[in-house]
Amino acid sequence: MTQCLLHEINLQKDFLGDETIESIYFGGGTPSIFPESAIQQLIDEVRKVFKVADTIECTLEANPDDITALKIKSYAAMGINRLSIGIQSFFDDDLQFMNRAHDRLQAFECILLAKENGISNISADLIFGFPLLTDEKWKQNIDKMLQLNIPHISCYAMTVEPKTALASMIKKQKTKPLDDEVSARQYEYLMQRLMHAGYAHYEISNFALPGFEAKHNSSYWNDSSYLGIGPSAHSYNKQTRRWNVANNALYIAQIQKNILPYEEEILSSTDKINELIMVSIRQSRGLDLSLLSAKLNQSALNQFMNKVNKWQNQQMLFIHNDHMICLTTKGKLFADGIASDLFF
Image 1: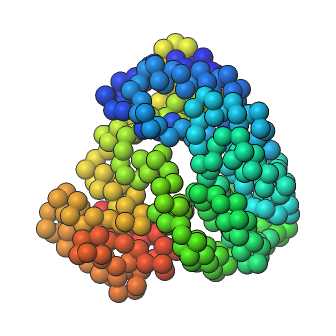
Image 2: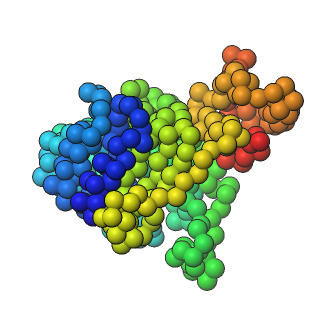
């Protein structure tokens, strides 16, 4: 697999044109169980094949139970300067409910280990809106994040996907179904608490102390090009979207034949407009109406503004400085639905 990843980097060398790489992100699963030597090879290959910024952000996703002092020191030495850690909760019963391998002590200690051994730029994830999570436990989870002074916090509502263990448990009445009202209440508390603690709510699910907004995530939301390497990886260069085959064996077989195993979608002008709406409306700065106006005729613009006025009347969004369409606190609870309604 490592040799195929290295080979794909070279096969994809022209996809981004002459753009400078601002961020490297090891994700898509559990890269913290990948050998450090392999990660080092991949970083070296990216630096050899592409033009890389001096201020590059290099992030690795890690599980708390994988983190050791030795591993952190190794990561820091090879240029990884940011960790994204899947904490999810600081309560053992919650972690067991989510089938997580780590416990609450590891959730706490992994943050300290990272900071003590060379990586202080940390993003940590929390999950809310599931049956075991009382409002009091949710408040304690957020308080622990703040006590640990984690500069970037990502929070997601639990969802029920078809054919999952959670879906089966709910169907068999072994656990309560998810409660949208509880989820909304916990999300509203999250926004209020982190705002008072000095975090910018710069995207629907993401909060950062000043200067710690994720370069990598922001590239998606700001319509920047990106290249994904490996099975299931997605790539985008403003004209096309590509996604690699998900099957590991098929991926390896194709790469070994010098074939890039991807499917591709060429974006229409309507696709690009809808993409702009979706990624912009999720950000605190909002959707720039002047950018949208340049892409639409008057009839289409009038149609769009009628929808905007409808949501504005429901106090779901507002227009800032006469040209930035932003969600209200209430609107953030329905971001995906609002964006979908605004699509062309």
